[in-house]
Figure 1: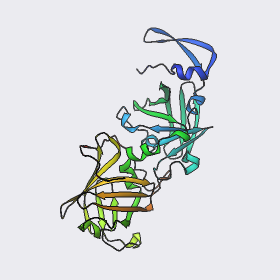
Figure 2: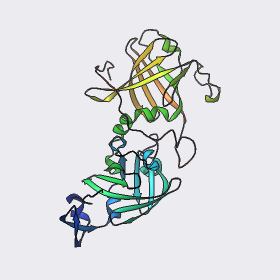
Figure 3: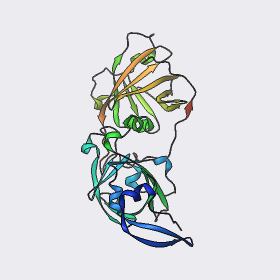
Figure 4: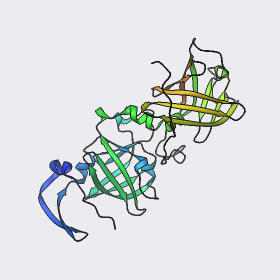
Length: 303
């Protein structure tokens, strides 16, 4: 049986009323304030879904695919894409359904995934747990206001999904510095959940006309003691590997630095794939518990 104290002191201070009721939890008496669940859910603009903290073997589909959700006067919003986050829906994302609250729980009517009844627990001052009793699964959400949300953290913590949000990445810049190498000829990259493809078609080629010349496996690595650096390896099935330092310039541009040749490349995303309330991407986009392997290297790009 799942038993928890529904609110911690930080929420109690602002949200409790003058009435109290005594409840028995595992044969112990606990003074529990009557509080307004709706106010708790609306106390932050954005709730970041920490997918790696999820407990249980079940799934709440709309939480599984969302980076953030927002509760706003009965309407549920979600940011299912990294691209556009902070701007779409004034930062809240897209309208994905409706909700109503009862004491200690929220009833959600999602446009695609239907009705869900989730218990609401406070973990600390800016973290809540949404618990689905049907699947015995808990999601942990951290609250932010739109003005202090760490967008850099979101991009770097979820960079694998970011790379997949465009149909292709088109090379827009190659530095004059750097030795000639085979990657100079590759003008398009495409990242899928389990493999990548590249093309030597000329820059400006329409996406529908691209021919994929190379294919292979790719890996993104976290760097020990450097949270804003990722590295990328492209393991071609027909040749040797390429190794890059990976930097996010903005929501549509990445930089790849090739240490072996000392060449800098920039790629711009083409063919943005929006994950709406239904349609393409809603199945394969679902986030999974994952952690990038850690690489013990030092940044070699001077920025």
